[in-house]
Each structure stands twice: as structure tokens, then as C-alpha cells.
Length: 316
Image (tube, rainbow, N blue to C red):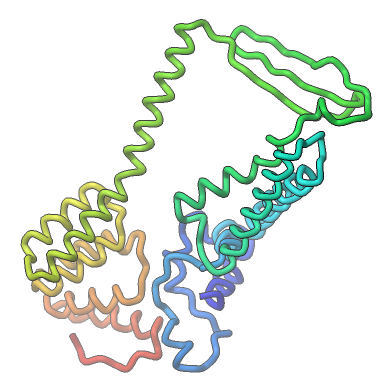
């Protein structure tokens, strides 16, 4: 995976392939640096959902600027936690212990990122973004000894107030903000926030609902209850049309059913976001069954170009 990821970076050195496009571009990326060994070559052209290295994936998708920004953000978080762990800004003992725990957790996260993809998992992503601002939240500049502290600079507006806290008349040590709303305004703001949170929660839950239907459908399929399985597959795709694993499996399901025209239709949608090598072989079989020999030959040629290690299969 890393060989082809570096090849992807080499081919898109400035801007990368774009956010979220790694798994789409990866199957078509063939690295000449891959060892000429069947045990290695068999992975050429296969689909993967991630680079299994967070920095490498960010670099491939967002280019060197994105990779550098990630390094700087994480380094800044480490530095702030390290300083607070050593008592900077008057951090109390309990705050120092929290800083040490945050430092260790961030180190573990970075270690896991070397061989995995935690930023694609909701739980670990929440943890990561909770750790980044932990350092600035600990300690209090007012407790730190030495230096002249100016009175806070306050900017008051009709609905909001911003407070700047300075030290030695030049160092900005804290910025505070608050909304000054009437009771009814606070109620509207809370209601709007609750509605927005509910909408976001509903949208976030859709892929999980589709996942459940997908897994239940596969279980029914293994039990031979194919009609019921198809109902769940279709319902899952209605809920989440972008569930590529489900659509890919459903296309295989249709191929086994001999519904070749529907296979081609599913493939047309699938290829928009999933550029996996094995899909070309699957569509070639459907084209051949429909008598579309030229299209089938085109897909077979692309399949073998991406996966040269495969033995030539019989015409499907």
C-alpha cells in the first residue's frame, strides 16, 4: 500500500489527489518501485480504503501543504501539553497530570496512525480533536509569576463581548468571548443549536443504518433467503446511496442472479466513486452475457493492465 501511496504522491506532487479521493485513485496507481515478486505484485491494482498511515494519506490527498499543516498542528499540541506538564502558566498539580495524560494519549494516537487510519473512525477522530486544544485549556496566565499585567482590553458590542488579556504590555496570553443575549435570544440560540445537532446526528446515523441492513442482508443471503436479502440491500442503498461496499456486493448479487443489465446499471453508479480493479472483471462478465463483446474486451484489457500478475481467465 505504501509503495503505491508514494507513487500517488509522486504523480500529484503539488495539490494531491483531493480530499477523500485516495481510495478512488489508488487502484489505478501502479508503482514501478514494487518488488518484482508475486507475493508483492498480487496487491497491485487492488482496492484499499486507506493508506494505513495518516500522514501518508494526508500527503497524498492534500499535497505537501496539507501534510506540513498536520505536522505543525500536532507539534504545537505536543509542545503546549509538554509546557503545561512542566508547570507553565501556573498549572496546578492536577492540571500537570492531565497534561501528561493528554501528551501520552496523543503520542499513542500518533503511534497508531503509523499503521492504521484513526482519523477515518468517528470515535478516534473526536478524541484527536479533543486532545489538540487541551494544552491551552490548562493553567491560567494570571497565576504565572513575574511580568506586568495590564487590565484586560474589553470590546463590547450589542450581542457579544471579547476580552483580550495581555502580559508585559505586548504578549497576548488569552482571548475570551461571550454572547450577551436577552433571555428569548438565548432560547432561540439553544433551540437552533438543538435542531442543528439533531439534523447532524440524523445524517451521521444514515451510514450506520445502511451498514446494519447490509450485514443483515448478507446473513440472509448466506441462509439462502435471497429475496429477503435483496429487499434489505435495496433499502440500505435508498438510505445511503454512497455506501460503496453495499453497492459493490449488490452488483455481485445481481450477477449471480443473471440480471446482467442491472449489473451494468449498478456499475455505472459504482464507478463514479469506487475505481476498484476487480469491478472491471465483474462488468466484463455482464457485458459478455449481454453480447457486448467490445465493451467486455475493453474492461478485460483494463483489468489485466492493472493486475498483470493474474493468469488470463477464460472469456466470461
